[in-house]
Length: 451
Ligand code: EPZ
View 1 (cartoon, rainbow, N blue to C red):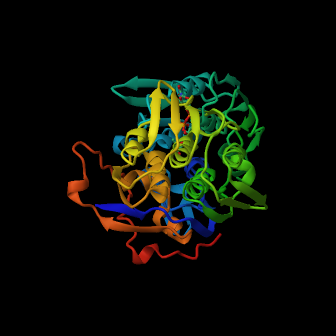
View 2: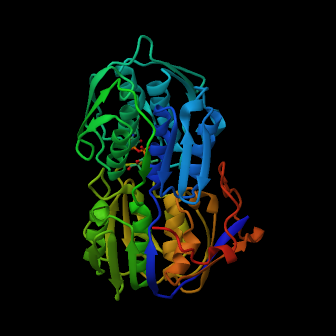
View 3: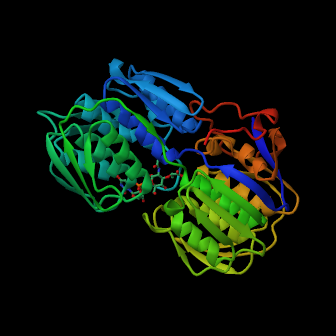
């Protein structure tokens, strides 16, 4: 087992190309199932959730190969319609195979998805929406047996909550439905616009992504294609919050500033100087960060819930008092106890966290989920002393090479063998399917990654 060792107190400096987006590549790799033949997807980050998705595709009979950041999937060989419980439980986005298999084969058999423990993560909106397209879905002992019966038919589907996953599931299934599906109350995230781009590149006819009404004309045969995944706006937010916490001056490239406007606005309000350009964000932070008006997480284009732990870590290491309201998930403050071990002053009351910035000190801490783990790295960069962060399996779900990226920005970070005495009783250490042994120190030298 490995841990991240971070020597805090040093400002960040440097330039970093941002990895491909986890929350876009997962639905895109699922969507290529819809067309028999070889699709080529570029800018695929090397993540354990991507590895799990590729495992599912192989299990369904597809051939899959990766060359660097490019993944080729041949879905001509699709034979199966069932996904193993073990793979389904690896991540949340496995539920999208329901819509894709219904759209391509007219049937699917899978269990409930897994994913980070952020509170209850039901899929009722997914099931209701797919049923309204004509899918017959039976639930038995946690298994979902789905069938399109006489075939999916396009119709108007309303989502009471702009669920990202439910929006994507409807888009995938509706490609296999006869007629036009109008999805009202759709999520508006940039990753959904990316999925629309892929589906149209495959010969689909999808309009309106990015807005709250999306129209899909289904029933047309789709063909394989070549596509480049957008950059990861939450990974970008991670490095920007790291620079706000530790101070310094960084440049992020291969990133669309318009995809994280709400985050940039908070960072500027807290004292960072930000300049943006084409596929570029420059951030300079020369004074303690903090003292924002209340930050409320909301569906896009509001402040992204995935950036909440990251911003909280920067505020905890800064100055002033800020209230955060987490409105998307019921239990997305699991990182607070670990931040408190570093001296963070964070008081919780239901959905509200009151963060009072003050100097942090190093401590042995353990990730509780993907973005919570990244938040501990943000805090450790500002803390006095050398911290150790366990639970890297969570971090590897969403970050291709967090330690390499941070060291490329001048951080003193390295991988070390896990010291058993640092592990606290009952700490989860989950390494999902495909979670590789983390890159060794030699491997974490800044790679010249194609942008
Ligand atoms: C996606 O999860 C992202 N994951 C999450 O990122 C992100 O936090 C979330 O969207 C919100 O932006 C991927 O894209 C793989 P939702 P998803 O359906 O689709 C409730 C990360 O760290 N809901 O938009 O699961 C749900 O409980 C991850 O990268 C229902 O009630 O999120 C939540 O309160 C974490 N019933 C709210 O909607 C449903 O059927 C938003 O969930 C579905 C959702």
